[in-house]
Amino acid sequence: DAGVIQSPRHEVTEMGQEVTLRCKPISGHDYLFWYRQTMMRGLELLIYFNNNVPIDDSGMPEDRFSAKMPNASFSTLKIQPSEPRDSAVYFCASTGANVLTFGAGSRLTVL
Amino acid sequence: AQSVTQLGSHVSVSEGALVLLRCNYSSSVPPYLFWYVQYPNQGLQLLLKYTSAATLVKGINGFEAEFKKSETSFHLTKPSAHMSDAAEYFCAVSGGTASKLTFGTGTRLQVTL
Image (cartoon, rainbow over all chains, first blue to last red; front, side, top):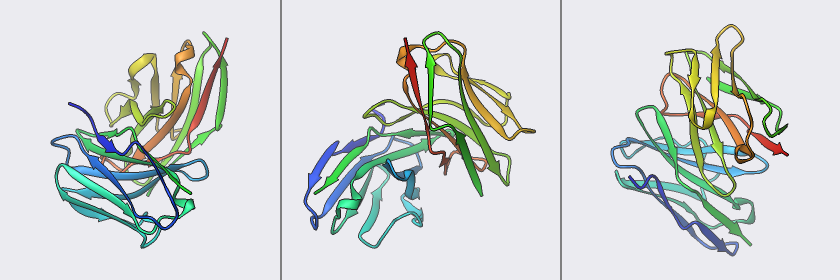
């Protein structure tokens, strides 16, 4: 199993641009999570899905953030428009058998 | 609701010394507890988990943790630190499943010669 796969690993963009982060969870896992990690706030849960359905998006900071999971093997996190304060590492994770497995993360820098 | 508190954002030990990273939890239901490790520029990796079975849990890389309900603690230990243990360690709690974890703020472990 290749684990949780995230792309891109690094993204540098300018303020106001749209950013799309992608995630492929582990096959068979029925929960998918998006986290954001910054020095100031640590690890924050943004949103999570169960069987492709969003369950809790209370951690999504603003309407500029949106997430979708069109099928069991793919999810996106979109930021439009991006701002410098969105610079962070974004992690996708999926869970099965009581183990949360993380991807390697997408490091976003917004100039 | 669940929460965890990690005491000490930075811990420094000598190579070969005991590692002790502290975690206290709060949970309104019997908790599931986890320790994760994060190496630089990588995602979080599960070290060990407690899911209401044995209170002493052994994990990877020689780490273990003991669930103490009376102290609401789940401290992480390793008898002898190795240079490769230098990383950030996160304690996490969930309310009975692994479906939604709440993470602590992390403890950065430094290992010196």
